[in-house]
Length: 154
Image (cartoon, rainbow, N blue to C red):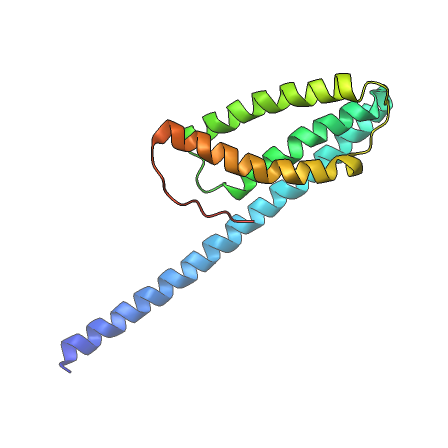
């Protein structure tokens, strides 16, 4: 091997190593900020639940609030790298339908309940989470016409 080729291979390997270190540092920094946001959202949810309790808001409406916030935040967190305009519009359509459905369920079906624990609603939230991922993706495809594959990162 000529000396020029050996020197070029050495520079190339140093460049790859430097790029790997920078990418690793960037991923670590991004995951740190994502974890900070996740902790802040948890603290804020806890504070909102306490404020709702202090103000005398019925527990079923707090459950309705968490039934809305939890699935949508999980979908946004899973698709955080591909937040395109079509995804945002699809999620907005799903949010409007979800709010109307949750209001109807909690106002009319659960009218006799003043207390309804979020833990009882958790199975419905999990089913809704997977349904929301599928439906938002189909609405997004209707907007763009593309059939690309989306990788979910949890």
